Length: 456
Image 1 (cartoon, rainbow, N blue to C red):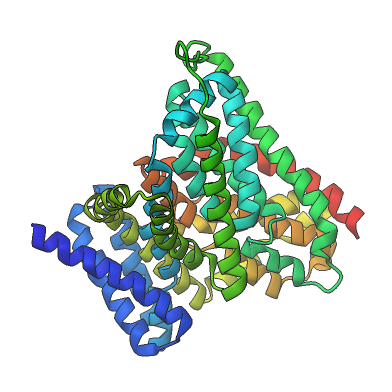
Image 2: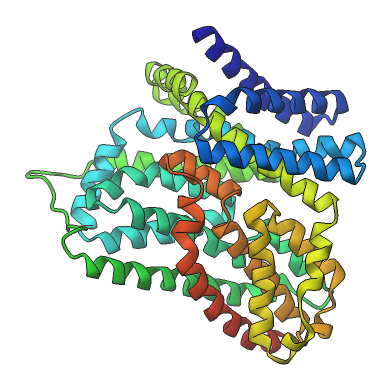
């Protein structure tokens, strides 16, 4: 068993290293090797999957193979489909390492003391999580949610607020999607010459605030209904904040975010590869600088022995969801979705906006990424034919993109939250957010129908 575990761990690490090499030096043979490694990792992981996950993975693989076979896709399309989520898989593999430096000393104890002194109420804690996650997400996208979950999750337990915390860290991340340049959805704003992303920024920020206020209102109601479930916390007798240690932690967080930003700007690499690259390098740099080599070795051993074992299930789910999503895209399913908007909706703008959002949300449940659907909608449909201005249509597409990623189970965010929280991808996406999603679709369909014409 140990030999099998070591072989699999080595294959996973080799796969990740190939992603870095392939990004810097494009090589078809290396892509083929990466695809073969993905299939081996998925195949070996099948017996360990839970029944539901096993059924999902097998169905996604089967449907993908049928679609590509029926459409007589070229080998390069098969390769592209198998590696569709390869960079995100690399992020999943190395994500546990990113928080290692924050455990070299008892930083968690200091944060606990700060929470007890400064954030006695759970709503204050959730406000801190919301602001921090949103601002960080604007800069480094999905990596921010991962970092905030790893840093703040231990403190949610002080308030017995694991579920409210999970909702908050997830939704505050998605709230950045309305205007963050780190989101791929900003390409929609450049699809039309008269649509300016800079002009949208103030409204995007306002949309993010409203998005988070809806979350806070729902959490406030939830907490008020169970007054004894989320207790206020009191500092331990004699508790004193070690400001020097807190400052060190703050500087490390700034350094980590800065490193991600600098590498991203300097290389132009996909953030899904930049974050794991920093996750590999940053802990050893901090360990050397702070003379915490023994603590680094302990963390690295835990990563090898525990984290790489846990991530196999997520690799299987997400690799196959990318395989299915790309197969559906290549087979033309995205273009078919564009024809599902009836003409009578153009007479009522809010209903048309809601319909566009739903067309992006619903297919994402079977693996069609909102990127594929949104791209098809932009390419095929003319906003004026739908009774919409270009700004209204662009905002509707971006909103649908945000909602699709938040509610669908086969996305990077769902897999990251599932891996971090040890809950199923369905619980951290659809089950967690469906009620919130319905409210948001109702509210933002009206807001977008009002704001769009104002913008132009």
